[in-house]
Length: 182
Image (cartoon, rainbow, N blue to C red; front, side, top):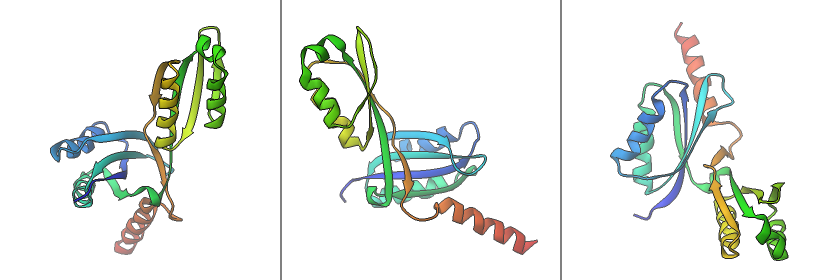
């Protein structure tokens, strides 16, 4: 089976150790995590883990089911890129001297719609938000000019293209059944 890049969106209670439990599922299946972002979600006391990994669909289904079995996990789903709105951030620190001596570097920054955060006599800090390919493309172009001092890229953040987040529907169902059973 062909491996594709999948994004898992995992919602859990904010409990110490849950990240370790989630990543252990990937480790046991020998699947490397490409990126990981953890933040509060739009639901009070629920955190959102955005995890990307190259996998087969069969393997990612199994991983998702195993993660969802964890007691503190509220909901887990996997997605392909076409099902999500995706963003990452790249930060680049460039040599001011090299930027000043080659005006093409400034043009490249503008062409990529990157933003200069700070410029001082030592370095120029640049930020680019977008897709992974855009961020790595700018990295390679700047690296070819020999002006890069530092570079880092954030993990992916994502929201679904569906009208309602699946975890919201799940929690509403839980609430209805809790009231229906009472």
